[in-house]
Image (cartoon, rainbow, N blue to C red):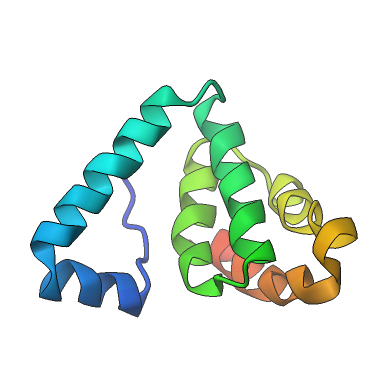
Length: 106
């Protein structure tokens, strides 16, 4: 992730105000990523789908830009968001403008 990626205000606050917890959290995230059998792009697209279905839009810009840096296309971002449509309904469409704005910026 060489390009500058936007991190949500909430996560920036977490990093600043609870650095020990943040360090443990990031260590855990890295270990989970290392255990995954998915390639990096597929895992990032899956994560975007989870963010959209859980209504965690704050993390979308960061993860969309990361997915893009891994070679994800705009259409793949859209598909990742909409994959949850049958399971959770149209709440996932809330994520579309946020994700596409992040993808199209730069």
